[in-house]
Amino acid sequence: MAEYPGLGEVSGKRVLVRSDLNVPLEGDAGAKVITDDGRIRASVPTIRALAEAGARVVVTAHLGRPKGAPDAEFSLEPVAARLGELLGAPVAFAGDTVGTSATETVAGLEDGAVAVLENVRFNPGETSKDDAERGEFADRLAALADAFVSDGFGVVHRKQASVYDVAQRLPHAMGGLVAAEVDVLRRLTVDPERPYVVVLGGSKVSDKLGVIDNLLEKADKLLIGGGMVFTFLAAQGHGVGSSLLEEDQIPTCRDYLARAAASSVEIVLPSDIVVADSFGDEASARVVAADAIPETTLGLDIGPASGATFAAALSDARTVFWNGPMGVFEVAAFAEGTRAVAEALTHVEGLSVVGGGDSAAAVRTLGFDEAAFGHISTGGGASLEYLEGRELPGITVLEAN
Ligand code: ADP
Ligand code: MG
Image (cartoon, rainbow, N blue to C red; front, side, top):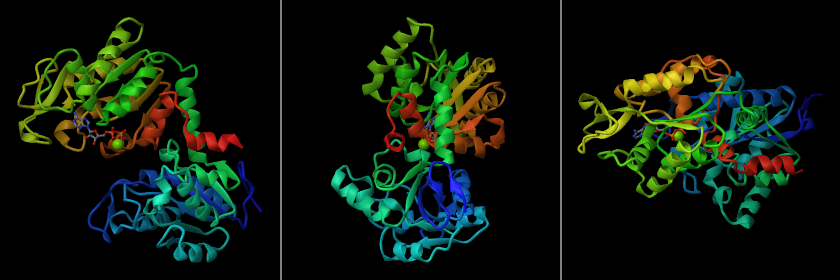
């Protein structure tokens, strides 16, 4: 007999675990190769703890963005195989999420065994905005289990059937991964140790502008890199060539710059940029001043002087949150800005947090030891929404009852 925190006795019980197994894959359907298994590895401890406690573990997760119908391109089968390797135990795979295969697979589980259900987003009910449609699907998921553990941090900001509605239908608990993530986020928002430096980059410009709004009051310094740089440079009146630019956000960026200037918070923008003649074109990569980006080029990384400035700004920080690569790190010629920031984070004394799927992948693919960072978060969007001061439905629902 054994217990799981928050659930009590789980031995012999069917426990549905919502994990985040949304990993990058390459290759054709049927022969997919996982290029970064970080999220699977992060999901292992909770699954293992439940299995060791004698639960019959039923894992549900999504992969990519299928359109609410089965699509071999987005099958979780290779992910289930990798999970089995990491667990060192066989993992059963159900070819559907709540159909005959799922029912039979779950019925066949012995105590301490693990099954993975096919991509939950093959079902339109998962992401439906219609409460009734979502609820109907959640009923079917809940029927497969006696209890629910929410461990997919990357999705807790989504009001989806396997994240939100199912928790209303089963005894539930927060998984160890989600609990650890929430603990770190609290340390970033409630009385952070200072200096508190936030580094933002990546490509989802408008996604991340909201977090600046909230952190403008909390952080001491905001270092901006990645694609969003160009909307800020445009807000300062500079040309950005054909770099990523969200023109409708220019007034917002202008407002942030004005607010920072009027407060004790400093927004640090890069002084130099690595540009190229076309996307990912390494041969034409060169460094230019941030206020003199040639019209025929586009910016793909922060320049070396900016990398050094950012590293210096991080050197005495006691709390750091970093989300979003500084450049197109997937291409070697545009990875140095991201490398400089990652390197600086490894020297931070205090709490250093890396948030975001691509940022975490960048840290790993650039060869850094994950242990050198205080915490590598598995959920970019969820961390950002929390840091924006918004409620995460997948967390609220667990705390509600
Ligand atoms: P995360 O997953 O860490 O939250 P994002 O998804 O927001 O990060 O952004 C990651 C992507 O941003 C990377 O694929 C990277 O190539 C891209 N990126 C970074 N800088 C630029 C840039 N200057 N122009 C275009 N894309 C960029
Ligand atoms: Mg991303």
